[in-house]
Image 1 (cartoon, rainbow, N blue to C red):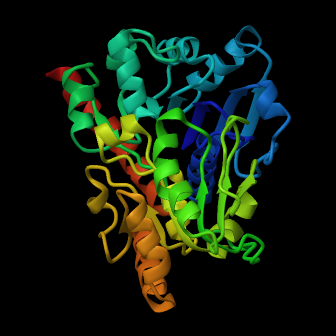
Image 2: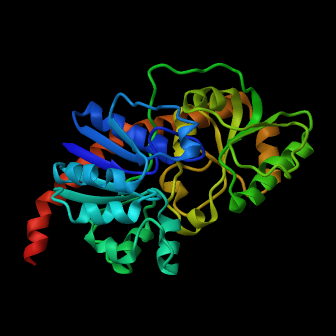
Image 3: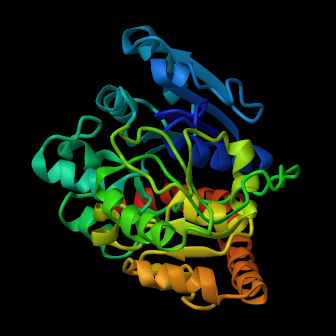
Length: 361
């Protein structure tokens, strides 16, 4: 298949989880024989932090402005089997209109931020998607599953809303150095709605356990934030260093954004990545989590600082290894990039098959 995507970024993972998601999916589709072209607008903060400027598994077009790219995008859409526009695409509105007017066989939207998008659609302030565009997609792919899929169809008129969760991309060559040894680590870009939980589930345990070591990796944290003395900050880690970060820590903390918690069924890129690399994960709870990992067997749940402190001081190495091994096996079996690519191909093939029937009804 020939697949053309307009998205936020595939060349830079700085401050976003979109790039690693697109890379994993595109690489796995390429391995299955598909041809992928990815359009992204050149933005300063990504341009100066491109950790994969020229992916070998897809053709990448970085353009300065939509006027410059519009004709080329239209030609590519007209000649493709599957067209896709992703959430937070800087030129999303124009790209969607171009896609809907094109001759692409299957026209799709990939929402990597579904709860946020739905809130924006309800407030009529989504800068990358209009409510009236939603019924035009053959498939509305969603990072969020569960009841929100029905809401997309019933409330917003999506023809077919399907889950296309993020995935873990196993690497043939991993940096598993012990450079980031600590008792608890967290990786994530600053978000105001996560900070209270980060304070509760990492900073408070760190203050109570001054003899233990903690690390926080991610950009955009305000300089005014005060960290306990035993918390080390890392501004940004390239994806090639993620394995070392996760495997150096006894426990890895996962914190979910508020809208994702309210929606449920929203596993993050970092959650699958940490599990895939063999981390023992401590996570806040959100509805549907147990459909991805079994609490106590594949993941640890924490609601307060006491829970985290108890895990740090109470769990032995055999317990940690058992939980991490179970989670890793689950992710590799159900949430690898190869599995997600196979799902994608199945969905778009089925969309082509049922479309004439739907049109006749």
